[in-house]
Image 1 (cartoon, helix red, strand yellow):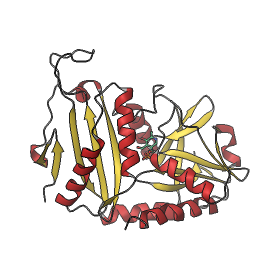
Image 2: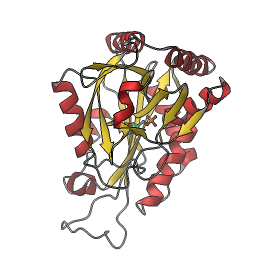
Image 3: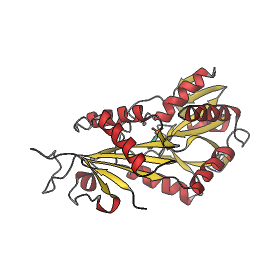
Image 4: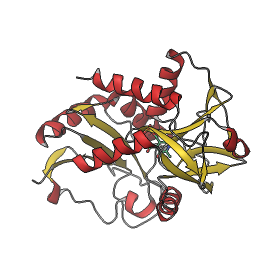
Length: 287
Ligand code: PLP
């Protein structure tokens, strides 16, 4: 069944959702995006995702997106596409302007606004559950991104290359190392349990302040853990009791090995388990 896509104010069939070859996202990666998880037909944490989209737009001097309108579009697309388990993808670009020139278009160029949905297959859902139950492997890679990783921009080439390296080495995620600290994954945030405390890199220009990250920090504090927003030194990885990733699609994903060496006991730890349960409680509360 063909799905419906929202493109520049209209709901159109997927096959007719076409973008110009001179769109600035195609030419310059001049655009921003968001990914929202849908559980049982309901968007999870839609409001903070749309707030972050708005912040990203402001940082790139794109026009302010209409959050209420995009929320209504989200619900309509979920309804039209019969989406039960899956994701909603938003992308806003600086639009089309020919001939190609780096500086912002002058005049009336309108942004390109796209919203589309992707269902998660039963196989993909089951694989995610298995990964969360058993834990995954990660590798470390040198940081090669720019210094505004707080903006959720579609300029993701270093992330793409890092993830591909992980895949080729049989790992789930690549962790960026900047100035001797393991800061985040190519599409996820990183947490450690170190000396009994939960540690994650501070929200600053070097990482994306994940919506799942923020929720997990809140949950960890509610569960009585001390959470410190500070760097995890690369040299401290071998004395971490636990490591885990967070993201909208991975939720709370335990890492049981980094660069081929076991993390802690090499099995999923109790803090990750407790935070997985708290995350799932919030998902269940949607229904
Ligand atoms: N860090 C990076 C670089 C990401 O690309 C993502 C998600 O795509 C995250 C962190 C996690 O963000 P969120 O929890 O909002 O999905």
